Image 1 (cartoon, one colour):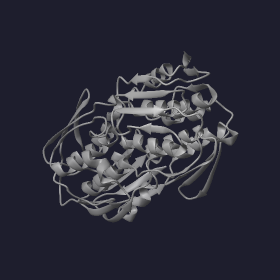
Image 2 (tube, one colour; image 1 turned 120 degrees about the horizontal axis):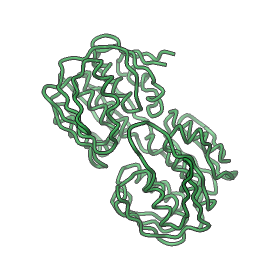
Image 3 (cartoon, rainbow, N blue to C red; image 1 turned 45 degrees about the vertical axis):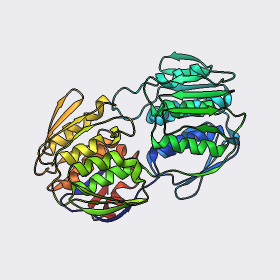
Length: 416
């Protein structure tokens, strides 16, 4: 499957952002903590969600789709404590079932997770948290076994503000005996979304959005109804798409506060941004100016927006510098952008980009989720017709990307 993209058309109109991939997957996992059904709305229709449905179903939960964008998850039949190896290999977020299963069953066995190859993403901080809560951990031939007849509250200091570890520990601690304090916790909006969801289940958590989270364990949790927050990475991706084409369009169903780091860099590059309560207007009259970007944990510039901003800076006036501080293999998209005429020099974790007046269409392959998105954006700006292959990477995290871009006037076709 490929996307065929005709470049040179400014994007105009209105596009609506879907629910956040990086929140929906974690809330689906968290639903296993409840003893009665959960209804989760604003769930994006993406491959990773379907994979997580497979994981939950294999564990004995019943998952239904009463309407588009809505999942009803009934954990009453939950009986498994070992998610299928092939599904865990497909998607890194599947590791998030560890905390709920450990809390519910006192044991869990998983394969080391897969996902995009963007650099080492060890789960040692997840395991550190489980050990602190009282679990015994055994790692053997690519599998991880955690056993804890009972979990106890603890004070846990993360060496790095890992999003996944913060989320997994929060879930496990929700059913622990006593109070857990996570220090140097991740501060991403998705952490706040998970806290809000867990509290709706009956958990007692406060502090999400700061670097210290306090969880008072409960004996049991019950189901609820909840709506996933908008996807800030999709918001940022459409902002760059409009800017790279010299367009003028509105992005709706978004939270401007969650993309302030991206807004700041686009404004620095000369792009006009107008913010309202739940929508953003992006207006770009020509080539952007060069900027320097350093990826950092939230609220810094997100690593998930690094490849997309690189595509924009490939046509900027002057020299830009991008420093990747989170995932060293984020640069796998660079060779494909070079084939489109981009002038990018790599020096370790740093990319030096000499802006060109234009990019040129060719056939390229998506190396991963965000790198694939960047190639689609480059194709929107390139002279000619670009074909982007391996789009299964892109469809893991973007709902109907081709359709949404087409609604803004882009000439983009999904080829079988």
